[in-house]
Length: 228
Image 1 (tube, rainbow, N blue to C red):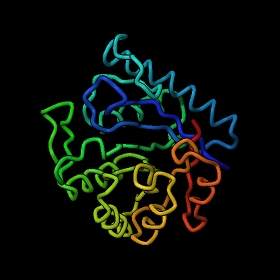
Image 2: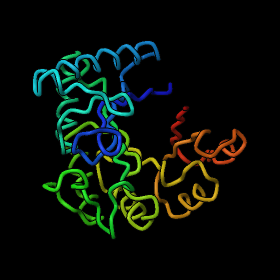
Image 3: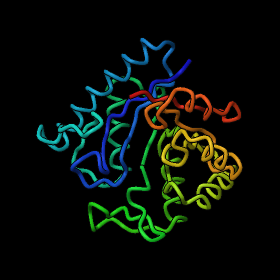
């Protein structure tokens, strides 16, 4: 059954807070139907509002551009801690996992990943340093999907991350969006370079249904369909 993902925490260019990562999502993998999955997502979203209100006050429940909350946080671990508490509060521990879309192209500068693009106290990381941060988060949180972990033309780092991922016990699906842009040529390049094992298919991204169908590759174990 397809699993709906709920974008519940926003950062990056989608919000006014200082977190560089753009989207943190809920994935109700323990649901037995779409109806149950939507219910789990909705209940956890409301539980998250109450967790944020308790921690930061009512003014912190403002909404980002994608509909997720944008509390005053700067680190992805802070966002994931909020989700852990919200999932527990909603009664779905073990049934809801997490996903992240850092949208790393937005904070890639001169070969470095600047997590302080909105908060100068956060570090600039080398590609290897950012990869280490992801692997650290994988060991602490139930993350099942990571989208656009590196910049759209940082092919070498994508491929290296996937290769080393074979040694990581909790390695999630690695999905290309800005990397592949529903474009046949970039999808082929991603395959050849073994840069990811999933891709987003977005009709509004490539422009036509036929081009979106052409970009679909059965050899990828995971395709994430996103509609406008």
